Every structure is written in C-alpha cells, then in structure tokens.
Amino acid sequence: MAGSSLHERLYTPTDEHGMLRQTVRQFARDAVEPQAMEHDQSGTLNVALLRRCGDLGLLGLTVPEDGGGAGLDAVASVIVHEELAYCDPGFALAYLAHALLFVNNFYWASTDAQRARYLPKTLSGEQVGAMGMTEPAVGTDVLGMQSVARRDGDHYVLDGRKTFITNGPEADVFIAYAKLDDRITTFVIERGFAGFSTSPKIPKMGMRASTMSELIFDGCRVPRENLLGREGGGITNMMRNLEIERLGLSAMSLGMAQRCLDDMVRYTQERRSFGKPIHEHGQIQRYLAESYAKVEAMRALIYGVAATVTPQHRNRLGTDACKLFASTAAKEVADAAVQVLGGYGYCTEYRVEQFLRDAKLIEIGGGTLEAHQKNITRDLTRP
Image 1 (cartoon, helix red, strand yellow):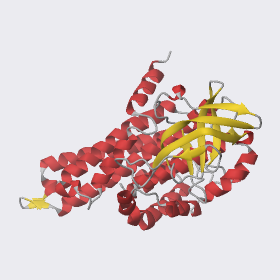
Image 2: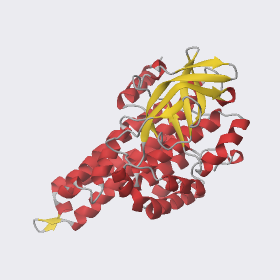
Image 3: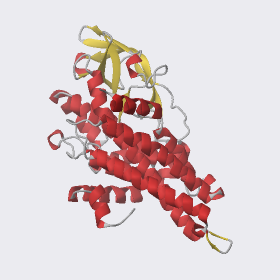
Image 4: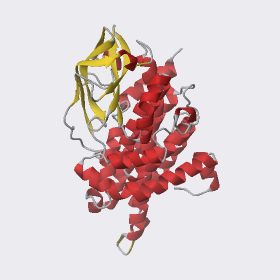
C-alpha cells in the first residue's frame, strides 16, 4: 500500500484505527495466510480461526462497549474486512456473515434480555452466527419472499426455505426473515429448534473457505421471546444492516484487488523476457497502471463513504456506489493479474486464480450489480 503520511491519515484516521489495522494485518499475515489455500481447496470453514477473531475482539467490532463490543465505527469494519480479504477472502466472508449479518444486525434490533442470552457466545466465537434472507425462488426481490410465520400460543411457527446462506453448515444461531400477516418480520433461530434443519453444504465457484447451505423451516417452532424487534419490523432491521454489509463487501473487494496488484508488481520485477523485466514492456505497464488507479479509486470511495455511515445515519446511495464500483474493479484487477502472470496466474501457486474466482461473488452477493444500478438511478432521479 502507499506509505505516505497523508495516505495513512485518510484511510487510518485515528490512532485507534491505526492500532486496529496493525493488529489485524499481523493476525492476517501470521494466522490467516498460512491456512488459506488448504481451506480453499477443501471447501471448509476454519471455525477455530473465527474464534481467534473473538479473542481479538473483532466479532463485536461495531457493538457498543456497554454491550460487550469494541464500540468502533464503519471505518473500523472496513479496515478489518480489507486486511482479512488480502489474505483469505473466503474466511473474510465467513467473518462478515458472523460479525455483520448476525452480530451487528442482532444488536441494533435486540432487547437487553436477548443480548444477555446470545451476545456473550457470539462475541467470543463460541457460537457461529448466520443470517437467512435469500430464498430459492426469490433473490433480489426480497419483498417477494415466500417464507411465512404464524402465531401459535407462546410460539411462532415458521415454514419456508432460505438458500446460499453463508456459515449455514456451521452456525449455531441464525437471524431469519419471514412474512407474518404478510409483513416481513425478523426472528432469532437456534439450531436445535424443532422443525429447523440445514441442507448439505452447497459447492461453489469461489469463496470456498466459507461454506453455505439452505436453511429449512418445516413447522419450526420459535418462542415468542425470539421475535427480533417488532412484528412487521423486518424491513427496518434489514435496511439498517444492509449498508454496513455492503461496505464490508466493498472492503473485501479492495483487499483482493490490493493483493492482486502487489503480486503483479512483484512478478513483473522478477520475471524477464527479451532481456529485461517484463514491467518494461508497454503491454504490462498498462495492466499495472490501470490496476493501481482502480485500487486507489476504490479505496478513496469506500473510506469516504464509510466515514458517513453510522447506525443513526444512512447513506444508501454511497454504499450502493461503493459496491457497484468496487466489485467490478476488483474482478478486473484479478483478471489482469492472471493475465500478467500467464501460466503461473492460471495455476494455484500465486493464488491470483483464487482471487479471480472469489472476486466474482461480490458482484452477486449482498445485492447484485443490477440491484445497485436500480437503487442508484432511483435515488438520483427522486423528486
């Protein structure tokens, strides 16, 4: 990364942010990097490593200190996702699903009693969390979800299916959305609830160090006290969490792109052709220069928007723009890295082929490119 003091102040604005970046970068290099290829190849989540994130206080990064968290902001979340994705995007995605899709989402909608019950074990990593929103027949059209809930005495009863759920195979506790009286409502589901199960692991193209499955609700009995927020309040919970999720995914794109750029630069300094380092060839210079420009544009946009987002202040236009631009730019940088490294890029040794596979997910998950285009256009043209 660029090393100027101005650069550091822009993207690591306080001493606390600086300490966080240093801690996570060291953790990522020492503990995350060495296991990354193994878990990509085996398609397994390193649950023990996720628990180490709990030891570092990273699983409750955006939870206030009086709730047992670190009390940090969206910029801090961006820092962590960028640094983890630099070494292992799949693990970073599993972290995001736990720390943002479950913990952050849960905290801002929960009661004190619910926090006392679920936060200690999820903040420590003793329990893995996940969130179920996407359905087999309904993706971006969230309002069209078909999972339903009904009241039954002191329980709710849920029926339906969720799919492509990150951490689904390992998670102990889930946030799930279903329609109650045709209004989207949020529930906290424990793995042991009667009528709840998960499918076998779903194989996938990239992000293989995180796992996913279906969530199956077949008359799933949920105690009344596991209503998260109010009946019919699911959209509010969902939208409040969506923006920090999109910032996290954008930061992952940045981490992947920075890694691919660094690998390109090193390779072009070491590899020679026609009697000189290949970075002296104009064709290679184009890949390097354009990739660097994209990485720096991603970084400026993501950190600039992150500084405006709080639990009380939304910036949907900005977060949509971050993810729309960063996801595609990261895929382009990863593709350039494969091209520059040639046969070595296409094979696994340098891992850039993995980053190309992984980068594609961000164009789909957490909102498709098309959804961001629609949202941005609607916001720009609103009277």
